[in-house]
Amino acid sequence: MDDTKTVLETRLRAVFDAVETGADPVLRPSDHADFQANGALALAKRLGRQPRELAAEIAAAASLDDLCETVEVSGPGFINLTLSTSFIANQLSAMAADDRLGVLGSEPENVIIDYSSPNVAKEMHVGHLRGTVIGDALCRMLTYVGHHVRRENHIGDWGTPFGMLIEHLIDVGEEKAVLELSVGDLDTFYRQARASFDSDPTFRDRSRARVVLLQSGDAETMRLWQILVAESVRYFDEVYAKLGVLLTDDDIVGESAYNSMLADVVRDLDGLGLLVESDGARCVFPPGFTNRNGDPLPLIVRKSDGGYGYAATDLAAIRDRVGRLGATEILYVVGAPQAQHFEMCFAAATMAGWLPDGVRVAHVSFGSVQGADHKILKTRAGDRIRLVDLLDEAVERAETAIAEKNPDLDAATRGSVAKMLGVGAIKYADLSTDRTRDYVFDWERMLAFEGNTAPYLQYAHARIRSIFRRGNAAVPDPGPLPLLTEPAERDLALALLGFNDAVTSTLGSWNPSRLCAYLFDLATTFTGFYENCPVLKAPTDELRTSRLALSDLTARVLAQGLELLGISAPDQM
Image 1 (cartoon, helix red, strand yellow):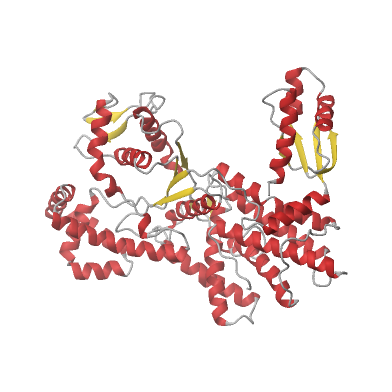
Image 2 (cartoon, one colour):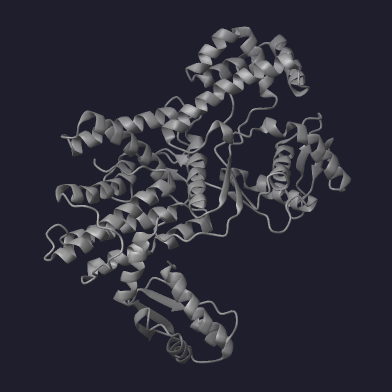
C-alpha cells in the first residue's frame, strides 16, 4: 500500500509544480478536515497572485475525486482535504493485510549505530540508560524499514586506568579478583585500585610501568587485561538482558580495537598537512571552532606525552567504518556534553577525506536523567544509581501495582507481566521525552496506568486482546473492507493510517518521542471508539466483524510500535 499522506502530497505537488517548480504542499492536521495543505500562500506571494484564488485553482486541478470526499479552500488560502470513506477503508484493508502494517520500506543504507558504551571495570549506572535505550530503538526502527544496521558498542577498554586495574588484580590475586568481579561489584574493585594509586607511590609507579607493557602488547599483561574485559562484558550482558536490548558480545568494538590504527591516523593527518603542534601536542584545528577568548580550538590527536587522545580513536573509527565497513550513515548516540567533540571530529574527518560526500554522520545527542531536585539522579550517598538496581526496583514496584489492579492474576503470569511492565515503564519514560531535553525520574508517573506511560499503552493492548477472550471471538481474516459508519470508527481508522508517518517522522529526527506520542494518541482514540461503538454487542454480525477487525489492527499496531521501542506488550495484565 502507499502511505495516505504521501499519495495526497504527490498529487498536490504535481499541480504546484505545474504552476511553479519547487513548490511544496506540506500536509498537516486540520481542525476542519483530515488534512490541510499549505504552500499556496508562499507560492501566491512569489507569483504576485491572490492566495485564495490560487488555492482554488490548485484544488480544482488536483484531481482528488478518487481520494477525497471534499476539497475546500479556507482562510487566507489553505486547502482542506476530507478523505472519502471508501478510500480510508481500502487503505485500512491493505494495511491489515500487510506484514509491515503499512510502514513503507526505505532504500537500504549501511547504517552503523554507536551507542551504550560502558567502561570496563565500572558499573553501568543510570547515566547509561538513555544512550542504550535510544540507540536500541533506532536500531529496531531502521531495521524495520529495511536498512542494513550494524550495532557497535564502543566500550571503554583501553588507556591509562588499566595500568592500576591490572596491578590491583595482581595484588588481590586472580581467583579472588574474578570472584569479586563476577558478583557485579565492579565499582568497588575500581575504587580500591584508585585508592592504591592515589596513596601508594610504589603502586603508582608499577601502574605506569604496566601501561607501557599494555600498550606494547606484552603477552602476560594482555592476558590479565582480558580477564578484566571478560568479567566486565559478562556483567554488561546481564544488564542488557534485564533491559531487553539487542546488544550482544558480537556488537562490542571497544577503544582497543582501534589501537593499532592510531599511528596511521597521525601519520596520514601529518602527510595531509593537517597536524599542527600546540604546546607539545599534535592537533587539528578545524575552522570555525574557538575558545572563550576567540582563539582557534585544537582537536588533540596526540598528546604532549606521546599518548593518543579520544579524538585519535574516534577519527580511526570513522575511517574504519567508512573505508572497511562501507557505512553510508553513522549515528553516535552519545550525551549532549560531547557535542563539540563530535562536531570537531566530523570536521577533521571531512578535511582528511575520510567522510566523503554521500556518507552522512550525526551526533544523536540526549539530555540527562534527573532527580526531584533537577540534578543528576544519584543515591542518597551521592553515587550514581546502578542501572541493574533501578531495573530490579521497577519490576518489584510493577508487581505490586499489578497485584492491586488484578488480584486474580496467577503468580507466574503476574511475575512475567511485572518484568514487561517495570522495564517498559523505565524505557518509555525515557523514550517519550524529547531526547534533547533532561527529564525528572518519577516512579509514580512512569508506573501510572493513566497518561502517556508504558503501562497505559500495555494495558490498552491487553484490554483489546481481552475482548476476543471474553467474546470467544476469532481474529477476522484481513481483506474485507471495514465499515466506518460512526465518527469514532473513522477517527480510529485515520489514527491507524498514521503509523507509517509516525515511524518516518521518528527516523527523520532520530527522536523516539514522536512514535511514543503517536502510540499514546492511538490508544486514546481507541478508548473513544470502544466507548461509543459496541464491539461484541454490535447490532449486526457484519458490524461486529468490522469492529473486531479494527480492534485487532489497533492491537497489532500498538504491539509493533512498542516492539520498535524495545517494549513488550502483554496479552493480559
